[in-house]
Amino acid sequence: MSDLSKLCIHSITTKPLGLREAAGKYASAGVSAISVWQDAVAAYGENHKATGEMIRSEGIDVACYVRGGFFTALEGSGRLKAIDENKRIIDEAAEIGAPLVVLVCGATPGQSLFESRKQITEGIAESVKHAAAAGIKLGIEPLHPMYADSRSAVNTMTQANAICDEVGHPNLGITVDVFHTWWDDRLEAELKIAGEKNRIFSFHICDWKNLPEDMLNDRGLMGEGVIDIPQIRKWVNESGFTGYEEVEIFSNRYWAMDQDEYLEKIKEAYLATK
Ligand code: ZN
Image (cartoon, rainbow, N blue to C red; front, side):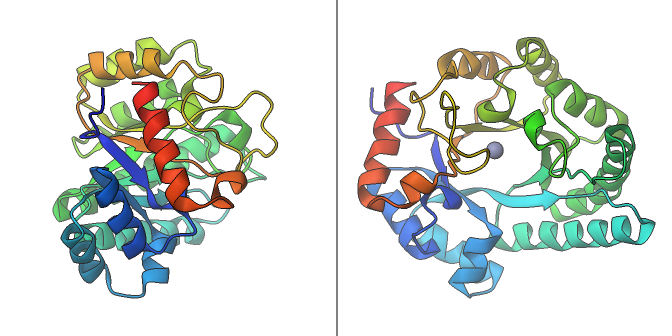
């Protein structure tokens, strides 16, 4: 099987490549879409509209703009600032022509995860109206609990579904990443619930290596680790998701290798775990 029509790659996955280079190489490799990280746009140096046009002119689609969120703060002024920042990110996504902004929701040392989740819910409720007006969707990405100290107080699909229920807006849904959710015994059930509510907005793939060397930057290629990707993909698809499968890998090891060879490895790994 060599169908790459659902294959999307995050710009950070091939971090050494510039954005134009990445878009061009992905398109030549048959990859269908790119998810664009803010740092890649900044390094490219053009405005967001021109950046989106460049990517599409290279022949690929923009799946997502990464990333908003970080709604939590000890002070109310910090939380208001975060909402403004998210509105700006939403506007940038609209200019690029990305339909979705992924949210890494935030967590603040010094306050409880319960308080952080309350602040996240409030921040999202404020931001999602702006997103809807701009034609943008927001995807809450639950992060693995090892990041609950400072990156996200939303660590499970159950919590993400609860926030979506509370905010109750059709432009708010969930980004499912196998790296963050594979261990959760509620995963299948919560995907089903999310599917019934049409809120699975995107799907990220990579692998969890057995004994990773780094908590952040040692993700594996699909098939290289312990995650049952075909099983999770099946649940995601059975929940009605038909969008891109986005390869998102932070890896000091892969960033150090020749990126053309790496791109071939990504394709092979993707097809081998389909
Ligand atoms: Zn992800």
